[in-house]
Image 1 (cartoon, one colour):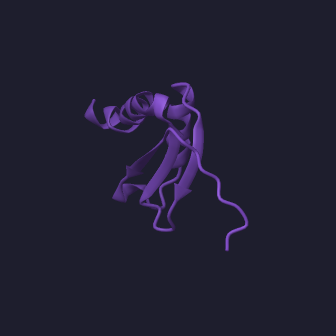
Image 2 (tube, rainbow, N blue to C red):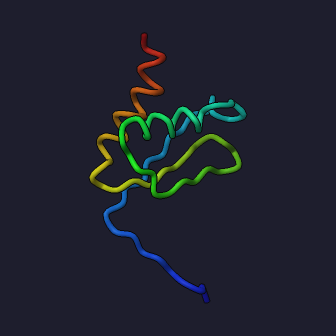
Image 3 (cartoon, rainbow, N blue to C red):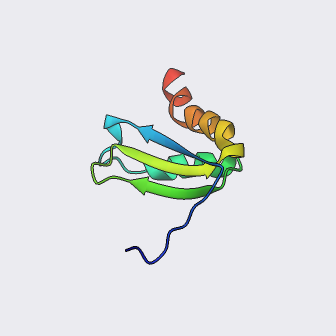
Length: 80
């Protein structure tokens, strides 16, 4: 018997996953900074105790912008 249930429509969940994330300082800051700089509002945050992933919830309208910002922050840094 929950006290309340909230339902949010038009939300996308994005999982940023990597074995190298565990016990590595600054990963969350890098993720959140990339999304902030791209103008994406984070509506939900979840991270498991394994520290191998961070899941963020964003509005559907921000999904593509968020994916591009995350890719740029983490993948482009390692390609160049």
